[in-house]
Image 1 (cartoon, rainbow, N blue to C red):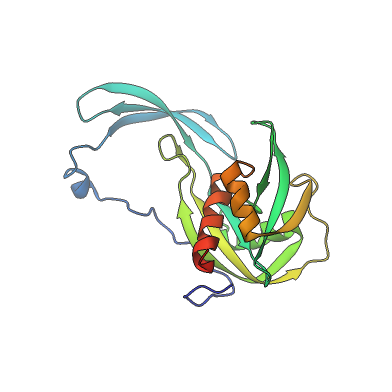
Image 2 (cartoon, one colour):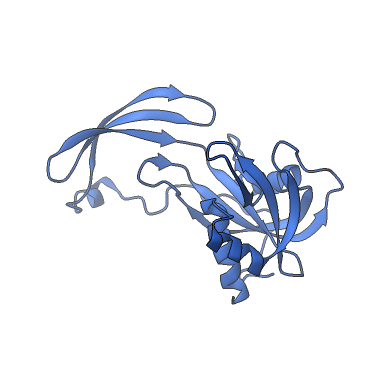
Length: 206
């Protein structure tokens, strides 16, 4: 599957916050929430937890937990038969089995596109000659800074290695139409996987 823009062997990260505003622009928005301070209560490799002191536009103040996590990169790999490479895995927090795309946290200093290629091979046992950024989004914008990036992988080759048993019960090529149906029925619960499938449907004209 090809998008309208040409791909590159590795797509570099688009650095900087999308839609960020300067201080002067901020003052023009009467609905802006003011942050008077933020204290860290826990800091680990995968999450920093803080409590922010917030003032609403009407003057009401309160404290709110804020979660900051590294970027995550997910891979939408589609073969010539219009099948999506998916992982069947258990998520212990919800105690649910679900279908997901390969993906994971971006290491410090790592290009997200490189992370996407690495996760594709480690979790699913496939390699790609190129990846192209489809979209980036925040799944929990009201409480967390956790940017997710979804890449389209093309020119796929089986790596000859077994997928990581810690990441998936099994790895399968699933027809796009079937995967979209799973998203509708709740068999796919992850926001990134659902969003990636909608982009796949858009590109395929489904």
